[in-house]
Each structure stands twice: as structure tokens, then as C-alpha cells.
Amino acid sequence: MTQPLVLGFAGSPRHHGNSEQMLDACLAGAEGVGARVHKIVTADMSIRGCQSCQGCSLTGECVMRDQMYEVYASIDAAAAIVFSSPVYFASVPAQLKIVLDRMQPYWARTHVLKHPKPARRPGGILLARGGGDPYGFTAAEYPLRSVSAVLGIDILGEVKVSDVDSPHDVGRHPLALDHARALGARIGSAAMGERLE
Ligand SMILES: Cc1cc2nc3c(=O)[nH]c(=O)nc-3n(C[C@H](O)[C@H](O)[C@H](O)COP(=O)(O)O)c2cc1C
Image (cartoon, rainbow, N blue to C red; front, side, top):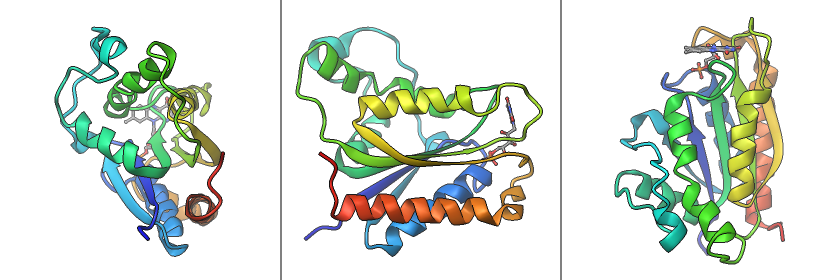
């Protein structure tokens, strides 16, 4: 039997920074319980922003044939999905937001074309921020929750770490990495056996 796939999005343009280290811990937790894992680094993908052409409302498919089609294939194969991101001006980085906006075909399928809703699957959210702005994590969390709802993801947990700015600052927060690993194990276990209905 093929092991279920846990897909992780690394939303930071900074490679191996705080949020990606949290994602790596989370995916290691999922791997530890027997899941397969795959990481997509959004900043490494050549993906254009949604143009609101409404093409997906007619066909359920995006008209822009770029690397987002690799992302769609991974999403469709995933038994669980985890998003990691830094907070950028109270939101997520542009490279991740482009990917989120290109999820519009999934929305169009259920809301316009009335396809059946996708099967529920587990997931999680991992956020890192420097601090010092008054808006906290909430505004960055909302786009990820919004997309999760469209993809049928049940968020099993979130890990948020503040006061991290240099790329290795998360190392000063071992509890955050422990929590990310534990969340990954929960998500992996749910994907392995306890499929959510
Ligand atoms: C363009 C930019 C915008 C940022 N905006 C915020 C912000 O609004 N709030 C905040 O708390 N931190 C902000 N930060 C700090 C990052 O969230 C912080 O450095 C984080 O640890 C980066 O995560 P990474 O190492 O995964 O890239 C910003 C950083 C950059 C580069």
C-alpha cells in the first residue's frame, strides 16, 4: 500500500529560515509516523498571479499553463497539507499569495460548477514573525485558513513563533520546533489511518 502524502508549503522567500525550519520539523514528525512527505518552496516556482479571467468558472481548470500545474498535481495527491509562512506586513509573502490565489479553480469547481466537495483531509499552519507591528498573526492566518477551507483541510493545529528575525532565531525557541514536530506526527497519523469524513 502506498503511504499517504503529507504536502508542505514553505512560503518564505528566505530559504531555510524560521518558518521553513518549522515546516521541516513538522514534516519530520509526519515522516516519523510513516507518511511520505513533499515540500514545495513557493519562491522557487515560476507561477503567475491569478488574472480573474473566470476561465476556471467555465471548465474547472486554470488557463495559465505554468508551474502551478505541478502544485495542483501535488495537492490532488496529498492526504494532508501544511502551510508555513512568515508574516509580511500583516499578511503572507507575495510568492505564497500568488500560489494561494491560483487555488481559485478549486473554489470554482465547488461553488460555480457544483462539483462534489473534496474529501476532508488534515492539515496545519506554521507562522513566524519578527514582532513590533500591531497586527500580530491574524491577518496572515486568514488567507491560509480561507484556502484550507476550499481545499477541504481540517486544521489540526497551528504553531506560531514571535520575536524571530534572523534566519536561525527559531533555534532559540525549541518548544516551537517541538510543537511543529508533534503537530506533524498528529497530521501524519490522521492521514495514515484516521481519515476525516
Ligand atoms: C518584507 C518583510 C515584511 C515583514 N513584515 C512583518 C510584519 O508585518 N510583522 C512582523 O511581525 N514581522 C514582519 N517581518 C519579519 C518576518 O516575519 C520575520 O523576519 C520572520 O522570522 C521571517 O521568517 P522566515 O525566516 O521564515 O523568512 C517582515 C519581514 C520582511 C522581510
